[in-house]
Length: 294
Image (cartoon, rainbow, N blue to C red; front, side):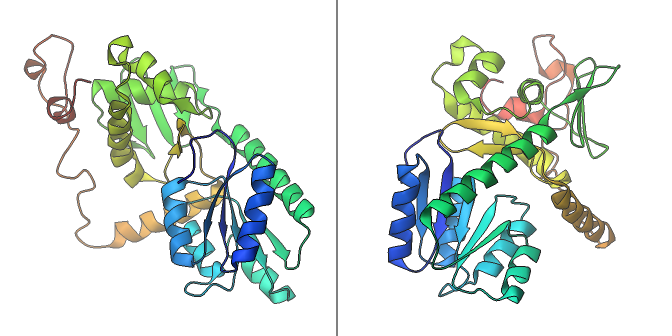
């Protein structure tokens, strides 16, 4: 297990133990947090579990090729930077790897110093892109926007890709706070203090529960906007343009498919009557009735 840290986290997927150990030692020396995997399957599982800031990826793995791993990540909407680290050095391999969504290509044998420099450069570029993309905008009507997500603090209305999204009062406050701080990683303590208040100090599981509620309602309408920084907290980050293009193609496919399933999961989150709140604060949803105090 890796320790909770704010240092950039790199996942190394390579079936050669000596390469993994060499790269891991170099990265830790340069203040990176590191996870390693010797197979493609283990690497994919770690990528989904730990949300690394960058992946160093061998191509010739015993089970799944690095090309396929990168392709699966991109199809899943994961834009984590990928640097191939491989002995395959033909121009056609380089073209294939980059066309499948890789960001850089380093051939073995390699200079550790040059590799570290490439990683730093890639992370700097990624941070600049995210900073440029994640800033929220607010129009003259008070509507806050992050990508295709809109939130009106005056009317308590939320829309994603033009589709209304029904939220409970606490879900709305949590989303509003995150959108007002788009692009920043917000700790669980910050969210507890600003959304729930001091009475909830120490109950970080409440944050995890409500982030899960938001993802369940927003993610079916487009690429994931709420991201986890392992051991730290959460942020709203806008996906890159190619992820939206992929989501558009998937949406088109769903629209033409017969009998599309109910993405709401049986109507969860739809408003109920004012009488059900019992306190005159306005309508609550089934989320408010079923979960912890919101």
